Length: 339
Image 1 (cartoon, rainbow, N blue to C red):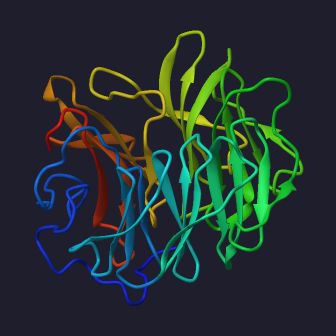
Image 2: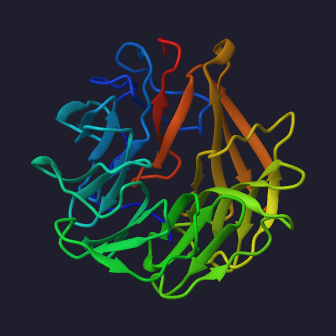
């Protein structure tokens, strides 16, 4: 995959107005566009998505659903999302879905704003959408169950079989953006598993740790379905790694290990480059002692990790511009009452 999405343009501005929760960078975090005022209180912007409607983005911060129709220059409130911190997944046809991270909240979003629906999942930990049909989607919950909808979330049916049995703690379901049937599962202690048939059968993922692993974060590369990235805590030495798979998630190898130069946490945000399967972005941020945020870039071709730093308490979402992947939109976190 490569190139840009027709109709999308780069922001024709140097600063963001209408929100202080989203910014953008043209140089992978060295310089950030100014925002409208400063973030206040405690808030997170996990929800951030670029739609297939040209120059249109959605974001969620402190329960407000924000929309930009000029590639991220100006934002306005278009609705409210109640109950949790939400992630947002874009879908074909100008649609998007907001889902509560480890909660039950679920909304379908179109040009008229958000509409709430109920799902069978009490604790959603992943959502995937059919790239050919914006109303065909699947969600996974923390118990390991998958559920499917063909009408944009209005009705649901059970999908596949659970990847684990007994009492489990699930951290993440991750879906291949190019193939809804390719799905990965991460859980406590036992690592994870992958399915290539929509959850009908599962294969345990190898290489995450001889003594087991807590598999917290998973992401399939939009540039190559065979490439899967993961962040996990290896049991035994109790050390965190970023892993890379080149066979769709059947086997993983360690590519980055936490160190004095690279901080990893349980559930590190990992975001694959949209057109280069060798590149991964990940972050470490904290408001403690006004540390700010490190935005890391790992290049598998060279094995090198580089980083930029900014003063925000955290970056909780990263979305590449459909016009040019060099431009990254960043969803911002505030923990200490200032930006």
